[in-house]
Length: 248
Image (cartoon, rainbow, N blue to C red; front, side, top):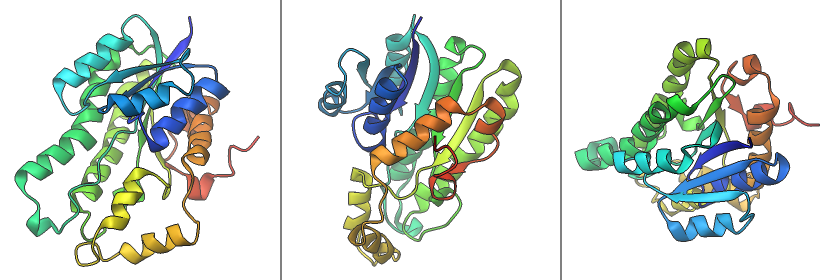
């Protein structure tokens, strides 16, 4: 029975590139999840025979149930929590309660409760991967919600391992670096008044130092598929530090 992976945020950027990598390099089947069906259709067009789509919002109970139903009866082996938002980009003093709750519903509650819903389908040897960020470990003015949610996601990966490893389910975390994706377009649109680190990200783009989604997808694919269990969970992997470690 063919192995399946779920990739959230599969309509663009890293998610789309990873769907392509998993089906073409590793001959897996992938369920690409995202809020915009049109973007998911573009992903599916990369390999219609091996990519199925599920338009769903991971932040809602209804969306998570839709994902569970779409993968039901399939041999689910891998779950990649890639879906995330950057907004609101503003000082914490100006963030509203509704903005904060919406952000955390996507970036933290989505991965947590989707994993919870999928656990009955995950057998020994299954893996879950969190797409993390340097912002989980480094504070940026104007990114209070994003930094805090990624820090929470980092702790979730550690606690899940303490709770799930005895069942043979392993949870990894990876920092993909600064990647040329639609989220980075949003980063560069911020004003320096609310995001003082703007110039750093403008320079990375101008100097051609952004990672391509395809490069990141190759790294993630090797981490997800090729490592042993102990290596997979040993640390939060960073493409900038470990990018050459899985070279063939």
